[in-house]
Amino acid sequence: MSFRYIVNRLFYTLFMFLFIVSLNFMLFRLMPGDPLTMVSKEISSSPEGRATLERMYGLDKPLIHQYGDYMKSMVTFDFGTSFHYKTPVRDLLGDKIANSLILGMAAVPLGIAIGILGGIIASARHGKTADMLITTSSMVIYAVPTFWLAMILLMIFGVRLGWVPINSMLTPGASFATKAAYLKDLFHHMIIPVLSYAIAIFGSYLLIMRGSMIDVFSEDYVLTARAKGLKEKPLIRKHVVPNALLPISTSVIYSLAIVFTGAFSIEVLFSWPGMGKLMVESVTRRDYPVMQAANYLIAVAVILANFLMDIVYGWLDPRVRLG
Amino acid sequence: MESINTHEQLRKRERELKRQKIRNNLHLFFGNKRAVFGVLLLSFFIIMALLGPYFYKYDHFSYYLGPRVGKPTPEFRLGFDEMGRDVLGTVIYGTRASLAIGLSVTFIVVLIGATLGIASGYFGGIIDIFIMRVTEAISIIPTIPLILTLSAIIGQNFQNIIVILGVTSWTGTCKLIRSQTLTIKQRNYVERAKAIGAGNTYIMRKHILPNVFPLIFSNIILTVQGSIMAESTLAFLGVGDPSIPTWGQLLRSAREQGAITTGSWWLFIPAGLCLVALASSFVFIGYGFDEINNPKLRRR
Image (cartoon, rainbow over all chains, first blue to last red; front, top):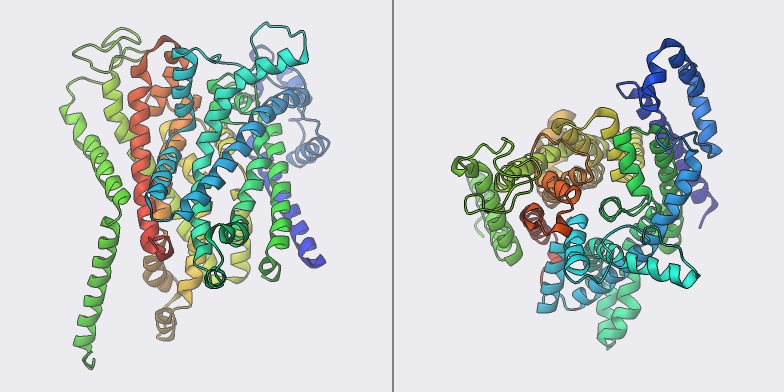
């Protein structure tokens, strides 16, 4: 891979960083209404109180200074204080990100694996009954909202059968003597959220993988391999799958990079104390420091992932570097 | 084939070819079982949206037609929501809301996507680089956090939700339209139009746009489905307009009322099933069109 390609991507990454992070600054300055009333109605109603609050949040300075302060605080990960919790945003986000990662790192790889495997099977049986069944059912699942699927699973396994707890991450108020007991409780609470999360995402991977496999099947080198007398199984394993994985590799990296942003509807439905739930609550509470910090972290993650995707893609597919 | 020598014959032959192509595509589309099923399912919802309200004799906006979260009765077969509104009314009127959201969001998406995508692909050069860089940057921002932020900033009434969904979901369509514009730009008829002095705007409007459109049709159909689902997810999360009854609002109240534990199925089963059926009808139609445009996807 050429040095020039990497430098080119680096500059582009820097451009995107500035663009998205500035957008994040501007959005919160453009909003109508008065964010300070969210901090404290009593303090902000008196002129002196307002002035104090404005000084505290740096809102009395000219916009360009505010932008400088904003950039400095973002780059140093010092996100200020939450309007609602009155605690440092950094500590708050740390816990929530960890919880979202627990859920996402179990569910997302599972969903991707099911999707890719299903896509391979469906394309190998292209046009046959198995393909019809797999493809149709993943189209339906693709059209099922995640939260509704989770509600149905919860109704069956949580309420009717009583096999699993119906919400939160750990049994409330429980204290755990051993690490094993803690893990057991966590695992018990995780089953349904992880399953519904994985089922909700696998459909789109399956459809992409199937399409990509079918594309590769019509390539000349597959015809050549068949003409050489290669059996169907080794042909799929050695020639078709590796080439078909290429287009899907970027979306896999992207999905893994944004796992920490949380599964919004699942976290809300199961009262899972993760980033998704925090962000949804912050909208209703107008907790701008939390939202701004969360947006910033998401931006940094996706920009890095994007850079990584470009590099990986350039490495896997030499045609990209030349373009 | 007989030789073509007059303008009249040429026109006739062109018309014939066009009709044949349409017949072929219709044949392909209706030969696809899933696509046909999708069309039937969608027609059902369109009829329900258009005619349903005329057969519905209650005022579904009125509160306390029955008890809060009341059980189904012979008169109100789907029970009541937490405000005592008839759930059947919300299911019927929710069809209108969902279709309205899907269509208007898609309209915004196509408007932005086609304008930027065609301009980018047609002009190329610095305009292309600028538009595509910005599109790229916006497209990598995860949608839900962006939507949540925008809704916190501009507010959550029905129109705002539509605008927010529109301005956050055009990037994919824009990229697709750009790449199709690049191929169509190379075609002879565009060259010919340029040679006889047609202006850029004229070419983009009369030649590029109509030829790009069929190629992005499945993307447009899937955009309708995506926005219907996005709206219901937002409503479920509590980011929506509570004054307009939608399926998503019903599902939110099911969550807030703990309908799953209390077994109040009427709060989430009918609305959820309608949502799944409507969304999958679009998915089936969308993938049906995909198979028309991409011969590789057809049966080997």
